[in-house]
Length: 456
Image (cartoon, rainbow, N blue to C red; front, side):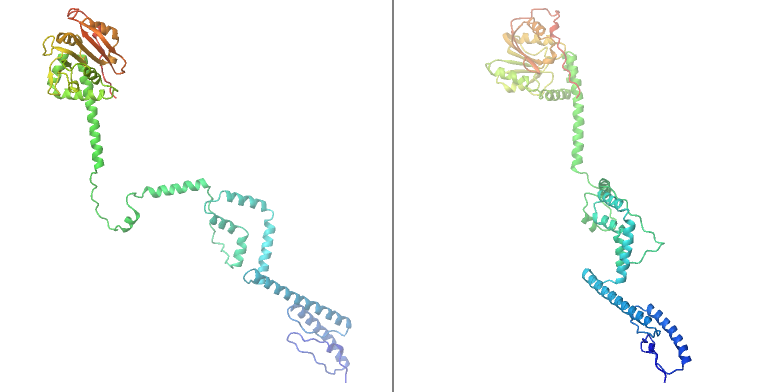
């Protein structure tokens, strides 16, 4: 019987290969078989190096003890490496469970390597990246969430999100849109204002939104809007304004005629056009009402302090305001009648007897170019020592002294004068006798300036 070789005891069982049994062989055959076993041992070692996860059994080795020792030393090292890798895998799984949802070790390792590479590539541009982010934050629009989303999608986090969510990679044919141009705060406000203006431009303010929603879709004929009272009021106001301008123009024309001609010509004018006197009187009263004090009220106040028995003659009475203010008997004379008490006549020839009145009044009525005739007629009807009261517009007098000297030559003397009022002067004269000059004598002081009203 042949003895069993030493490598037969230590021959391990490889994957899919059973143990090698020993049988008696001759000496020559045993030598050939030993070389074949060595070749088989080499192939088994290569297979053992390829399979790391499994623990292959020991293979038959050569007869030398040195090879056996080396094989035993290598096997424990490989086993310890496999056990260590298993422990590391368990620890990593526990860490993933603590931090978040479970994830595969291979994917985490690949992502970690990718991020490390990108951080290494982007490390040099970190300063420029921070400057760009600060600039974007300064010029960010009012919707910060959207802007932050856009920024995050362009940063390194986008790679991680795409990897964890397993999103499909975009095809090279699809082109991603360019990010919108960030506007400044002022530009954004202006754009919003323009949108609101364009929106409100075509919105009808009178019809509410609910009425528009409830309105029928079919087109219905809308009746024409009736003329409102506001339109009528505007038209009436326009007509009144135009009529007032026309009346003002006619008043200025009549006033110029009265001051530029004699009294008999003015009488004929009003006889031919009775409405002209009414128009002139209305315009004259509207002008006098603007004065702080009307001269007729001042004369009435003075006459109320005198006896009520005095007879008064009012030359140019108008609407008989003086006769209505005092208790004295008053004779009213004017070129036209606005009151039943008025006697229509030329004031240079009144129907009164000589020396029949106590007071003669000319209140803003020394009009025309024949003022001397008016004053001589007043001298005729006044009693000796009678009172002549004259109130006239202050702008008509160029020289008050020359006017007073001219009046004294017509048989009067100055009793009092009041020049304090800004709009008119008031004079009181007393009759001393008949005129001291003849009818052909020239009295330049009696020529007063015409009181003409300008267009306003």
